[in-house]
Length: 74
Image (cartoon, rainbow, N blue to C red; front, side, top):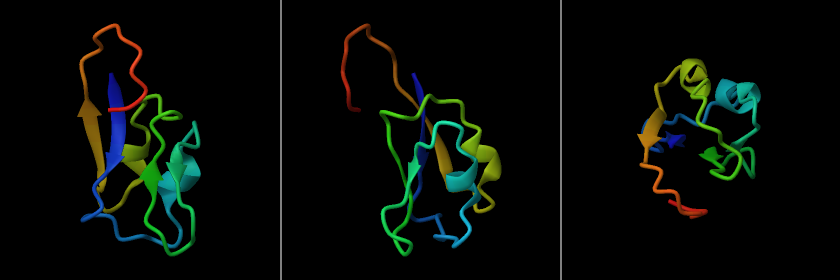
């Protein structure tokens, strides 16, 4: 199972976050304008399209094995 994660050290908290705007699942969440974005794993489908849009390279691809269980969190 593949999911996107945001490296908070690389994220520059761009005011016009293209990752936030372009995610087809709307899985990139920013609660307040000055907060750094984060990925909602319940919405993220692992398409990794967000990785293309981040100019700062802050999107990481995390892969976890699918063990057949129904675990909601990582």
